[in-house]
Image (cartoon, rainbow, N blue to C red; front, top):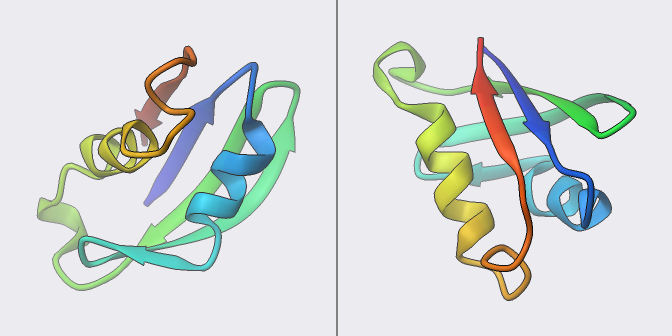
Amino acid sequence: MDIIVKAPLMADRIKDLLDNKAIEGANFTFVDKKGMEMSFKASGDNIETMDIAAIVKKAIRSTDYGKGIYFSVIQK
C-alpha cells in the first residue's frame, strides 16, 4: 500500500520516524521525496483492513514536533 506524507517542515525527522519501522503492525519503507511529498510503502499482515493514514498521523503527532507542524497523509 502506498502512503504519501506532505510536510513542508521536519520532513527528515518524519522520514526517520517511519523508514524501516514497524508501527502498530504496519511496516514502512521510504520510497522517494519530491518537493514536500514523501512516498512510503506500507506492508504487513491485514494491511488491507488497517487505516494506515490514521496510524501515520498518530505516530507523527506523538512526537515532540508533531503537534506544531502542518502535515497531511494520503493513503493510496
